[in-house]
Figure 1 (cartoon, helix red, strand yellow):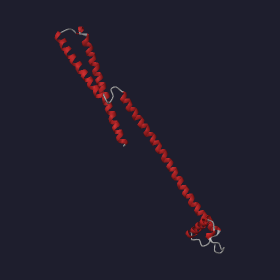
Figure 2: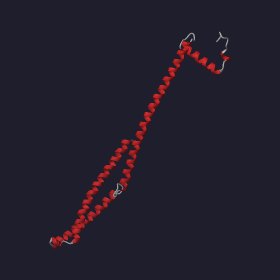
Figure 3: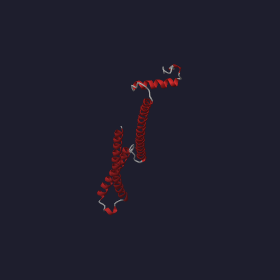
Length: 180
């Protein structure tokens, strides 16, 4: 520049910035003089670095997109599990008996069963003291015997349902522990 008798301060700002970059590149590459080959090498080096940076950015963006797809898939899976759990809760709550009132229902059935058994035993004791043949057994007593049999069957079914509900409750607790 001094050979051309041009002062860098008199040049436009854009030219000053370009000269500054060329000067820094010349120093970093330890180039003594600027010839077209040196300038081409500097430009190629800058372009290579820029392309490498863009490539790294693209790789990171692709990895980010893959992770986002995985996150969305997992979120959808979790949402489906939550929906299934909520539907199961509603289904259990709509049943009669349900987990909230199963113990009361079992108590009532046990009381009925105990009452029927007492009535049966009293009637049976009275019947045996009368020594009547089976053919003339009172219809009320026969119906109570049938009712007693039905109630015992219902008790076993309800016990099975209570066991099932306890198992569901235990599974729910395990699921919530696993989820945490």
